[in-house]
Length: 164
Image (cartoon, rainbow, N blue to C red; front, side):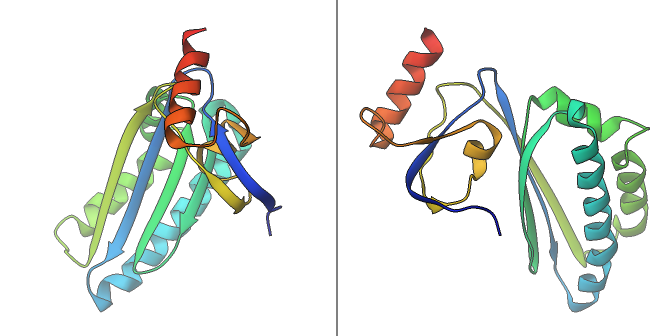
């Protein structure tokens, strides 16, 4: 289990723009549930590859499993996400092509992804009694103190730090 940090913390995004990449899959039918297993296994291999290649740009990630499986990941940049996705030497491109061939006409499994660029000063978060999580795990995990207690204060302080 990850170390818990009692009290309130916030996350400071890395100094450069950061990419927030969310993806997931959903078993739409009972038969589709079995089709999610190889995809989930492939995701594990991809995350293993990324943890061994920090130069690829993945900063941190969190998974949730269920009928709808979600991966939230933080990257150095959107370009890093796109580069990894299309790199023939990385484990994503071949898996993606195989997935598309096998279930493009099968509605048993749905997939989705969203990619956002987060600029310094455009993010605020609060983490109470949590391990380092989200942007705080990708960037800097800091205790909430004076001038950082409310959402409005955190946004304004981050914008000031960015402008400095």
